[in-house]
Image 1 (cartoon, one colour):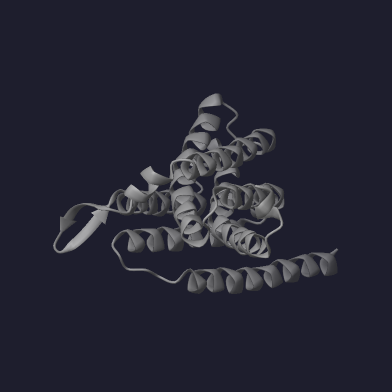
Image 2 (cartoon, helix red, strand yellow):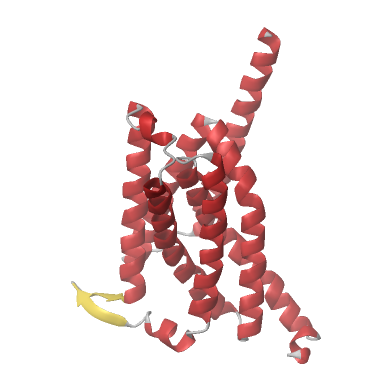
Length: 241
């Protein structure tokens, strides 16, 4: 253990893997921010805490089951010449869940059909939010951890990188969630990102890899445009007042 902390290679692996885990965690933060915007602020904060705590637990648990995890990438059946592993099945299921959830939320926003439920305070609404967070945590954790296994050799480095990434996700999730809740157009943009991410997950499950750099560039560019739109609206309000 001491040798790891004094090894430059170990520190380089930790920094690289932490950065990668943070980037892969962006999807999780976006989903978390959108889903908790449907419940009151006090419950939303608790849901974020529970969701990210579960994300950390899932990642560490899966890391501790490396042999089982490696088996997830082995094909369990073949369809028209394409082999599907448990990882592929989970990615396809998670991607379809994201697409369906984001489409439902977009419909609710456009039709304003769920306004009466948007501020629901019942335990049922809170429980359903937690269930959705757990489902998507499992999907994102799997992809993240398989990447970690491919990049690092030592379990201690993987766990340290995951813990650091989850702490950063927790710190950033609050401001992101508040911003999404306060700006409806930003929420719509975030939902569109979720559809895009869902499509990428399904494509990965069918062995068609869409480089994540394309998706993250699209997210960054759209977020920058939306930032200037928000700034322009704020300046117009100040000018009117």
